Image 1 (cartoon, helix red, strand yellow):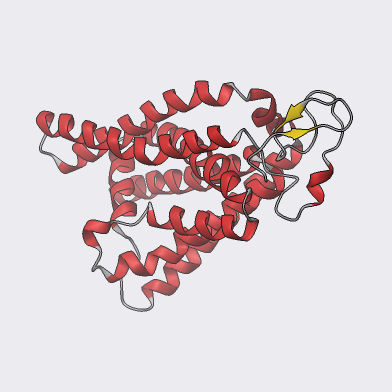
Image 2: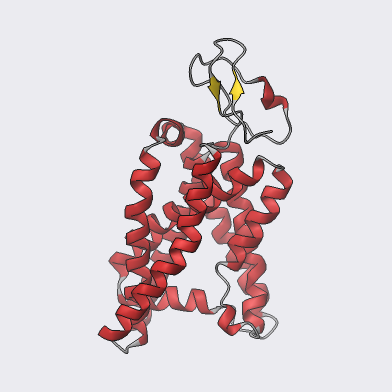
Length: 270
């Protein structure tokens, strides 16, 4: 079972069986022959994986609900309200996640020291952008405007608050989501089965970008596969190259989207 401690045959110390090597004596973990375990994914203890998932999902909605109530007392302007909620939520979650990730800095941040992290991360991020552009174009051929409520909200607040958009949407948002859905959800599900982990990760990542209050909208359903595929691609980046790669890929995708929106807004104004 990948939820129980493994006894190292070399040094006799107990450790998480999902780790590639024994953290005490650095000897190889023979269980990595098990097809359920990836050599690239960054693993933390299973209960911490659940904590990351809980913070990024349940915590996200609780914080979002509270901030929305407070923001509604401050302004009735929809754009300002959305900006306050989106930026405040991710700034707060980023402040919560950062010290929790530092606890496992040795295993999490070591992926940032490898050149593959940046090369493959950027390439995957650019590939995601290009795929989304192609997918959006194909959707537009059906006669629908290929922008769902989530994208419309992000686009509006980006145009009004570009600097914050680069910081929050481009850098902090991906950190929170990668900690939640890859370091937490994917890694936890991988302890059961990697294929199961990919399916769950893709579906949940897709539906968190889905507006259930507008569930009858064809656009929401048409854009859902794009998010699901993005979730699977980021899981692949994480699975084979670690947390650093999936974060770089996610951040690259978001930064390109944010900068493109800002540039397009400036061009339209002039």
